[in-house]
Image (cartoon, rainbow, N blue to C red; front, side, top):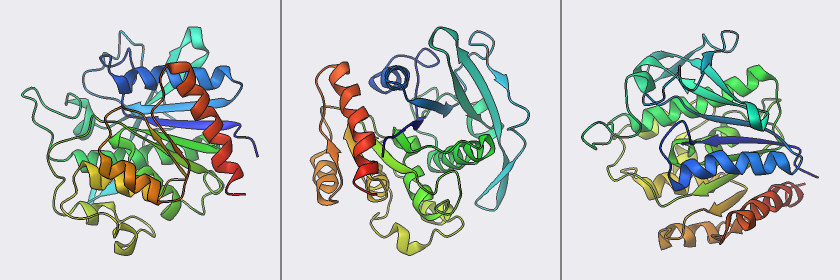
Length: 273
């Protein structure tokens, strides 16, 4: 089975945020995959540093308006979009006044990580999946980039498994070496519970939840893993290899990397038919 539709859920995309390994991949990989003939959709958080006027973002009213309940609190979901004219594609942005609008990215002006980063990741993941449902678009493969997307594999396999949009979707998780230093709040596992997600589904993740534990959760519910950075923690490499799923090693050169991802998409579908 060939992967015709690929959903990219990424943490950073240049030029909307400063250039980094993650943001350059966030921009270039979807384009490369589209150029190979696949249909794509791309999502990222609407970080507070993004200039909406300069980048011509506008709200998509028909997709906005839903409230997502996290930790017993309602959080309005706002969807914005920008067009990459030369590339014939759009980028969707997940926004919320509390989580993104008046913040920088994952750290504040002093470099301190936001205490609710775990909650923001949950909102981002659920916001993307609810929006894709509204689009009535059924991705064959969902490729997650960066720790802000790390809870997506869990939700695809445990909370949205019976949704028509995701019933046949396979998930690929890309690991980078730009994690976070502090632990998530003590009740992060409780915040994660949604629909059919239970404590048993989170047992591979030790507490307190740090970057490595979050990546383990992502890999445990993924169908394939990509080592995006050269300096990935050995613990994570060994964990990925223990799962008996396809693992793409770090590639030298973007073309080789894009080809490896492209091949992986078909492989995770073929291996799971």
